[in-house]
Length: 181
Image (tube, rainbow, N blue to C red; front, side, top):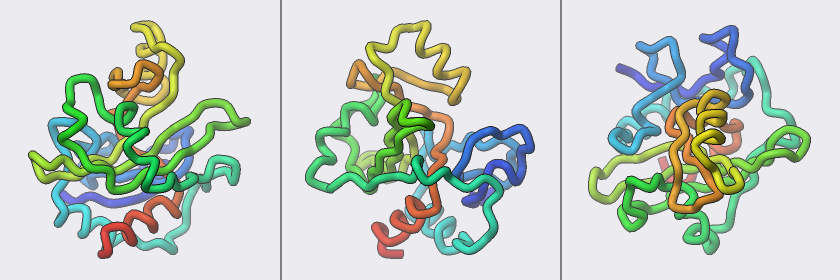
């Protein structure tokens, strides 16, 4: 099983999103264990993905300039941790490796794109979370239908997307730098 970074539009002509995702080459869908709390990937797997990624490959649906990720300063990381970890996870188990904010189309919707390190499993988790004002069961169903499986976080205004992480090329380049690979 190999993991790659690519545009989902390359393997799924119905994909409506933008950016690049981490995908398992043996699966036609973009879901990956790298985003699930009971999964994650090892440093070696993440290193291999980033080393083999061609930063100059053509992208099928480039990110709209208003949706580029904005890096969040390291001194603000702790403020964001509650919204990035599901209620079933322990916040203290995680370290933040990378964190960036993305504003949705037309300035609507706020997303956080991030990479966590689980100290207990020694695996990396790549995810995103979306801001929802006081999510109830109905809004979680709507979000899950639109974005993939969403779970409540420790922060009542955010939902964690456990499906995949789609982000712009700069996010992936910065991750490579952050891990000093």
